[in-house]
Image (tube, rainbow over all chains, first blue to last red; front, top):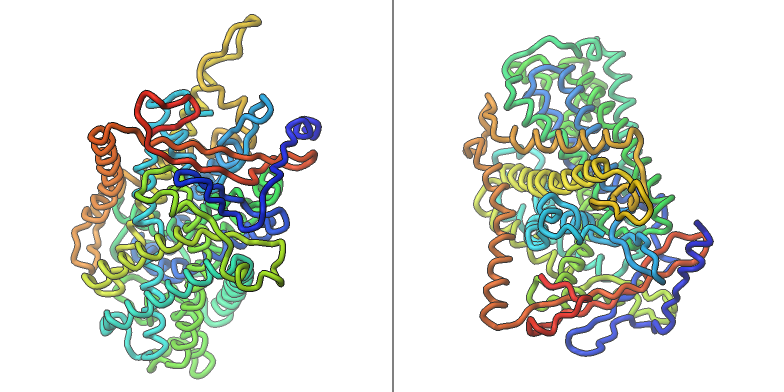
Length: 137
Length: 472
């Protein structure tokens, strides 16, 4: 793995500070986050937990237990919902780490990109697959 | 397809509902006697818009601080949920036999197929949020190793905590059917929880005395703070998704919205932040804020605050999690089936048919195809099940089918947008092309990441499209 990436080493040299380079009216260069400021594992986990634990967990328990009318079933529903979401997360991770792919020095590598399901929907959704078979990588 | 996602996400990819809920809690802090029905729309909307503005300003002012805030909030929230879980279970065991009352015994109404679907839907909503880090995946260090683990740790934590906190909730407030509202002071689990706790300490079990207003105020303030944290995270990620949508060239002034620039702090304190030059999408944040405020105003003015919250969160879950999620996972399932159906070439030189996903993928979950199959089945079931009639009517005066129908219509707005773009291009005799040149930094021992991206969006005549151009 390591040697493969060593071959692909490609440095972008002239990235000055300030980052917006208005080359002309229809081009724009966006610099991505510098190495030192990339998000670590802890922040990734926190992003999920901070966004997830909020009003929902406190407003929904009552709705659910009155909806199914049975306290054990309500707990089961909570557990099932958690499993389903975990499965969806696994799918997203698979896609997020695999597409899009870029050709670097003649080899295709996956380079994760921001945007979440925008990329997955436009590259791999049912409709897109039939529309442009070649788009998927 | 890009248009369908772009337009849906542009309009509904925000937490306008939560901002309204923030307003509701702030009202409860100021005036704790007022429960559900005496809320005034004006102040709630005003609170909602102010908090959204604060989040947007923080987002463009400093990236570091919003991430720091995000982490602090996450730790606080997990700690509180853990404490509540233990307190609740301990309490239920000590005072009476609350925990033992959790049983399969059916109490009162509910339990129809429509109710179960709705309950599953409601139960999935608090879990949504898993998608956040994917929206900023380019900003993650070593995505292939650290990221996947980080996501799974977070999901594992939540998967354990949520059923447990519900157990705790049911221990404290044994469910005895809809007629018996005695133990339920509020439909909010947190208020209910601390209410019981403080009442028991003072007077003993089953107390139905006047509410302790300070408790309600305290909890409401805390929950409002939680939502603030929630909105910070969403503003941070969703503004970057909007930037990505703009890079696809489907918006007017796409390049303007696609621009990233130094945050305000990085500009003001050049010396202190020297060399950091942290980035934030300013114009995209403004776009995000604009649609959020628009939704708050439209829905907030038409409906009572609590109904507006329910409506907006339902639509968010249905469109962003349900429809877009279903299209995504179904596409992935197709790719898997496709590579399973097209076997490896038998003799050298033969080109393998299909899309060869199994050669391209870089990550394998446990029990591999199973999560994908479960996800497709569950999301498909939810989309169709949403039309099953629940036995209880909602108190917002809308028929049960209105919300899923509205949800299904949203993607068609995207189709309409796409048709509009087509007509515009035909009439003008040009094509909008976009080219994204990505600079990939691949250093030995690290995952390759993109370091910069040149976005080119221009209008050209059909004849001059090059193979590098991606037209709509």
